[in-house]
Length: 307
Image: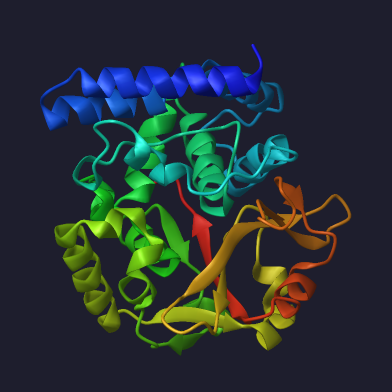
């Protein structure tokens, strides 16, 4: 079936299912199930798990960073698509109070590539891993404290994604041990750009986001400055998570990706850039990539743990 036709039918089915349910919680369940029920995505997960087993990486004993990077390699060439996590808001019954766990493997943005690579790598270590295991891993990374409680519970700022996951043993913030500086600029981008976020049309959600931003004032970011990256390059491992920090007022990061040491030992970036239109490995080295970012100031970096 052509992809455009398949997308139309999936969207129509989602709208019909959600509209038929009077209870918003039941509607949210239907949305969640729909978001994790695309045949192509399930087939891709099964194929990637087979590849990990073939490569001897489908084990809880396998180095997690290497598994994460292998998943990223398998994703190379996958199309970029922005705003997939907000698509449910346009569907009948979609409400920011009841956000589903949106999970695609056939399209990515920069954050969903990182989350999906980590989720598959962790799920692969479980016997008979399947789609539900993958979605569970996504959910516990994407939401504050691992608890999904609507749009405002999502870890929207990537610096908080790192700190929250670190607090729960899912990653280790490498900044302090790599000589990071503290970035204490207040995060206010969402609150001051309300019109750019569909969910923030809801007054209650907007208030929650503003309150979240204020709470983050007490939580400095550990920034490895651009000039310092070459000096610590040998301490960065393939599969480490990268947040590309910026100088934009009120914002911590403009992009995310994975550290990727190629077969020649050169550290590059495996990522899903808007400009490239698909998942790819950078041509330049990690230091070169960061230095070329227009508003870039360095990186936030975290090492995945099994948790």
